[in-house]
Length: 318
Image (cartoon, rainbow, N blue to C red; front, side):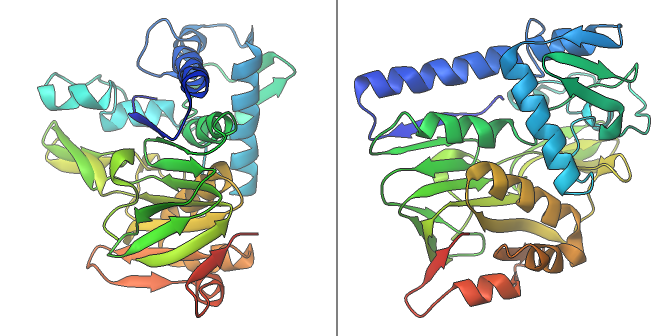
């Protein structure tokens, strides 16, 4: 996953359990470890391969995310990420090393099938499961912490009251549930003359402030303010639009969504970000509160968010 993990309030055995969870998930699902199961699967030339139970679970969740977002959160964007220059851990992108030369081919999540532990996919498909990995891992890790929180790469789940910032100013208080943040404004790098980006630092909570209380469920922010890099004189980021195979040109810098879990909030925030102008309405159709920060700094909210924010500043996720 290539992110910092922050744990608060955990007892010794709980902290050890969280560490084991993230170590297993990193070893299995990292795109940047040549010995990870994901890397080995992507390097395998056969169309069918047997995968571990964890890999199968995460891939099945990724295909669910693709279905519910009409393909906007797609696990087959691995080749497009390589073409955009995101071919190594973010910490190494500033080193100025030459990018992998890749021309992305059109791919679709419909070319991937998981049946039990048997994975089948079209030859040449490179999987990237980061659309769901962090949300899933944070949700799972939070279940072993009785009174505290777990944060990783902007995703936060808590079993106690905790405050974090909202995009554009203010704070969010999460009293039970999760918080997930995905964006590209803080971490940026240049590759081949193009500025690129990825996600936020979980130690800072959500980017740059707002004031609501999430009493049930999770909150996720997706955007382009944290991880960016440059390639060929063009500013790039990690939020690939599967419809084009290129980094999204969304009008939003950050999209924040309240949902029942980090996983659901994160998936919805990514989809709403990629939908740009249509994002608020897409969330309204699903009854999900959404808050949008534009590149000009203007904050907007969809109707579900406006309804959810009551006089005592509470958002209750369904």
